[in-house]
Length: 313
Ligand code: MLT
Image 1 (tube, rainbow, N blue to C red):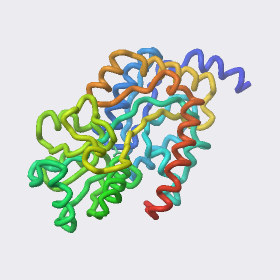
Image 2 (image 1 turned 60 degrees about the horizontal axis):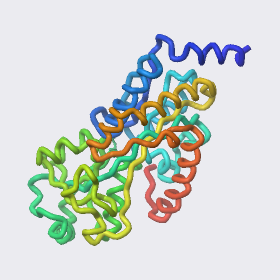
Image 3 (image 1 turned 120 degrees about the vertical axis):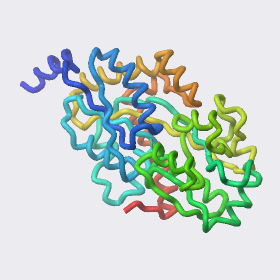
Image 4 (image 1 turned 90 degrees about the vertical axis):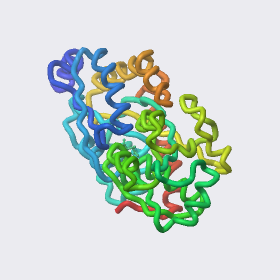
């Protein structure tokens, strides 16, 4: 009988009830930005309403856990990033399995990261920043969005590459962290360009280096890590959408079809490019592609994190 109901459920999906898209970080941050832009287009294709619910904390795992145990009728989805693949190695009591407890919908966008300083930080370029960090490491604080967040991983990579540990200050997202970076309460932060594009253009923060081997098209004047003698730094934050395990396949297909249309929408693609990001291709916005990618990313990050001996709990 349930199987018979599924097609009707899928045909009417989403109906008048809004779809809740959980963003596991504070409002106004980079994950929230990608979520709001992609769901605005998806809602049109689904002829329904999608509302964002920000559930921050613990590097995105609190929001992810909420969706893992939500009703699997298609009216709750998760929009998360690379942190979905690092959480299993970082959290011993994670409380969910990213591959087993979710249906895959598809990938959304890739976002580059930049190392930023507060305006009052004396060095004006990366060459001067490195000796300054080494000489003042006990007094400098690096902000992030919690263990397992993109900003945390990028900060880990940066500190291990330069061989210097800094104090770190976790926030529920890099939106609140950016406020403190601008205010000078923290000194440095690795963040996604979707969050800091406006502040870089307004000159209220100091962008030192793009955390990848090539310059970011929308920010050509920020030198790339490879140019600054930081070998092997290639941080790109991928974002994807998930639904609770057991969401009917026909509903998953409808959600993925709307996501594929959204990532190919010229307005969404243009918004991402303006912010230095890149919308996923239609093929990547499919469930099977995301399942493969997530599996590969978990396999890639687990040994790296285990070797670093970093745990969140
Ligand atoms: C992160 O560092 O994981 C993200 O920037 C968090 C956020 O979207 O605020």
